[in-house]
Image (cartoon, rainbow, N blue to C red):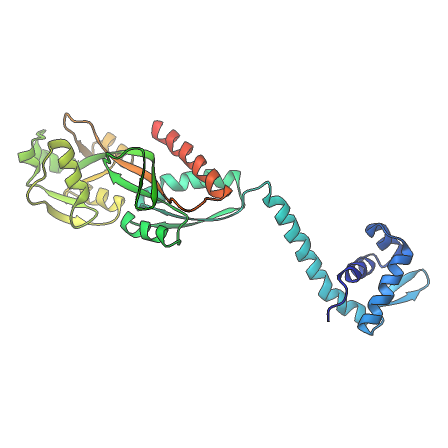
Length: 310
């Protein structure tokens, strides 16, 4: 049977101060109450805890052994209580987030870093992948929220479908790029469907969703056969392959701004507006978000919106 916790508390202060009087002051009780508590604790344990020498008291071996057990417990208790008190005012915890590879590796991490500066007790578990992989993880409860990209999505900014809440976060401008040498050799300034369709392309998946979306958006039709030189789930790989003349690829405009300015790459444009990649936030409808998630979503939404305007 464990000793009375109040008596252990008294013992802790006496051992620390090596004084009954000092312990009484710290506990806001009388010296008599401290002495009685120690006597009852010694009776419970069947061991003497202190020896009186002149005006001081000295712990016995049993007293030191008990202190070595009680002191870590008191320290952990104090730390735990302080953490609970801080949690009422500070955000803390881990957010499990899913995101597309390029968006999660760059734009989202900038927002995470900014949020962490304001809330250093928050941590993140970031899972990068395609929406087809991430949304099931969200539905299974393995993610708290996820970001998904939809090429030129024509859905409303906020929609509800299949138990999910989908809200627009930002739009990225997408461009079809080619190396300067490839453009000179095969296009020579032409942007006609008949000149573009037979060329080789680079895409993220075997069914070429990005290239198909680009053609559908700009010409309202898709080549009957898209010749893919390379498929890779990486924007940087698509850019690298395009620079080496392997084919044309669709990438976010901000990722190739310098290469376009330097003339290393050429943006293939038409009279139509640019294709956009809509980044949306996906959450479960029947899940009530906590304070941390609510404040994170509000912060990231504003941060990404500022980045889009910039």
